[in-house]
Length: 281
Image (cartoon, rainbow, N blue to C red; front, side, top):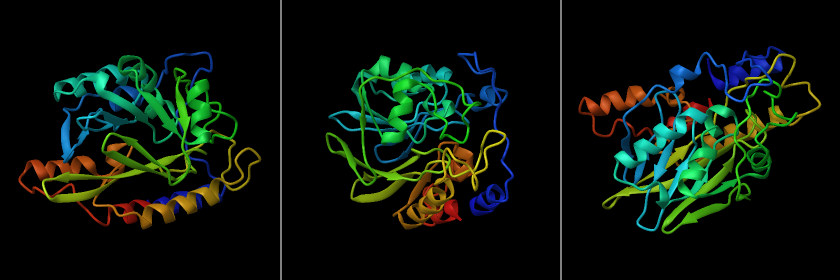
């Protein structure tokens, strides 16, 4: 089922199911979470970009001698495995200078609080995401309001705008607003090199129309721009230079299938210049 088909279902007034929760819980009672949080060995994606997430939740480390950038933190319980993966690759948590986020739901932002405590890193996010990261709770404009678990509030969160570039030493990552799944959803793009060969990498945010019961993407008063945001995000993803795509849920972009092919000897299997266009289709 393509993302535009999912969006049409939303337009038809058919909200897709999401995890339910006890609103008083501080730790999710989430059936999918143990599977999402199953360990996965860290590995080099390309150049100075490393996968340090879990089997079901991506986290990417982009490294430099002047400091590192980490995108996404998985669940609250993912923080320690992510930290262990970073250390196992020979990098120090204290050298992570900046934390970025795709979107603010608990399965991608839940571990950021602990990772910030461990590293001392600052955070950069769009205005809509920054508000949630600071408070720890999504607002009524989020399609999953009422069922999204809270996260640990973050400190030192600075706001970036669509198209802004964030820098740590020689690292430069550009923010692209690809909202719809959440009001502040963000994809990130950068370049990684191996010798003289450089590739364009994209961390493409979730583009699925998942909501709480009663929220209609086509007819609501709390996030009336949701459908327009999805369509705008599709256009952004289609336009990006995109040699390697990774998504917040790795299987959404076929990462494990591509990694298996690389492990079997196809050295360039992670590269697919059409991946972002296919992801937005």
